[in-house]
Image (cartoon, rainbow, N blue to C red; front, side, top):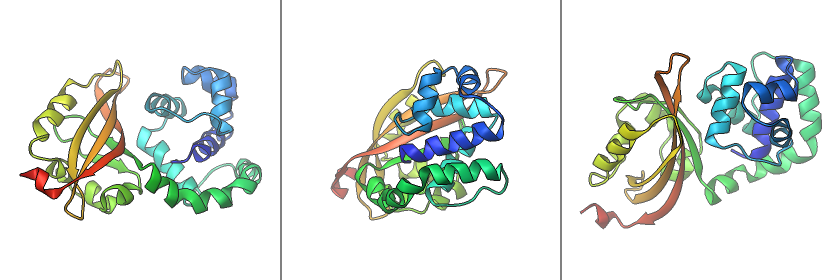
Length: 224
């Protein structure tokens, strides 16, 4: 996810909902200047920012990520303010073509994958960004089609620690952990995940927002 695409999406949503930058900042617990920098692509969003902005717009985290993904791949939203959309397209016209050409390069060089999972015990993926294929070689549909697919790929020696980490996750702060996961080519890749637990209005666990990045590739023999 490239920073300018996120900014374009939140500006479009803000205009569609008739919000000023000040109002969006208030609803998402951010500074107005930070919202402005997000929209202009000067700042990149953290997991907490993504969660807060999605809540402010009244949508789920994975729905916001899906809109950003549509922006990256040039899809037109099914509905929305066409005038606002045209304005955004004009503002971004000079940079969009160059950015789209670099999407694959960015995904390969800095392979950050965004995932939304259900809370324990299933941990089923409800959203997976398309660049999972660059990171692990699998189509994202493989993760969305079976709740246990991701967990089966986790190295057997690392699986207990991964599950323990997920069980200890709370909403007070993001949690970072490392583990090995088997790619489609059979190799074990070391990945780092930043996890954020999102609660619903009643305070119950609603979903886990994940940012996954490759650490390195280790030999297949490491599996024992």
